[in-house]
Length: 67
Image 1 (cartoon, rainbow, N blue to C red):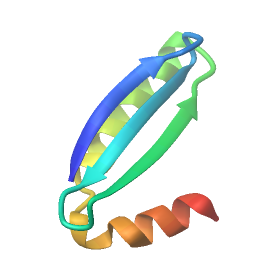
Image 2 (spheres, rainbow, N blue to C red; image 1 turned 120 degrees about the vertical axis):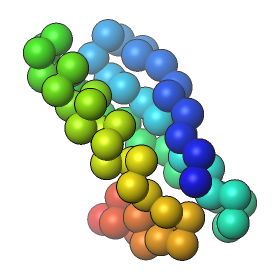
Image 3 (cartoon, one colour; image 1 turned 180 degrees about the vertical axis):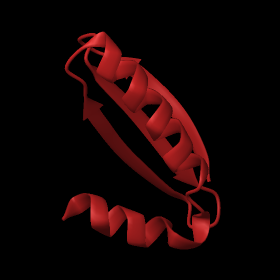
């Protein structure tokens, strides 16, 4: 599973793209962050969380994201 940081389109939204090399599937997701302090906290939290995502559960993750 590889993670690519996309961009801040308005300074508050952080968009990511995940690509599962096993399933050849792209997963897109974003977070809207309310201020700089929360942005920094959530950014670090997101980094830690998705370092733990494995390609074996990318389909499960994708389904959870869509719910």
